[in-house]
Length: 233
Image 1 (cartoon, helix red, strand yellow):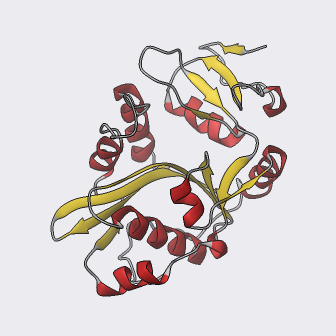
Image 2 (cartoon, rainbow, N blue to C red; image 1 turned 30 degrees about the horizontal axis):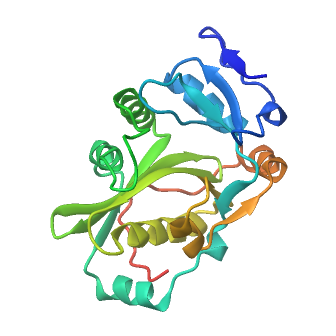
């Protein structure tokens, strides 16, 4: 039975109450205020819905994740990174990145990154919880991604690319810096061929919950606005 959230409560149902079909649907309703979003990620769920739908919260089983020391960088991608055609930054253009991620895709109808969703994550960015990765070609934003960092965990949300391999260069750069900063896990949420090509794999929801318990409260050495060091992954 699906749980409907109350606006005056930030409590989510236990993860094992999520539906099997559709896989991982945990709750509906509530709102997108920053405190609720933070509570959701800390609990192990995330919002995902289309315009016209109620606000839906998900915790799929299995969960797609990437361990920083397991990132796969192909020889061709390493070559692209070494060529230096792209410049990568963190937290320089968060609103532009999330707006680009929300743009229409050829393979999808509409977007789940609605205007209220964008506004909510921009507020999280202002709180220092949400972060962006920007990939530049000269002064043009050609790729990027955004997500949330809590403890030693990074919760990836969405990425975009306007040039060949741009999002991959941004993602690999992020993963390498997260590894240096002591992060243990990157939550990728749902499986895609793109993510699997970079080394993402599935773990059970119970395993994911264990990582939350172990690493949410552990400090990292992240310095999001520090100058980036070159990396070939």
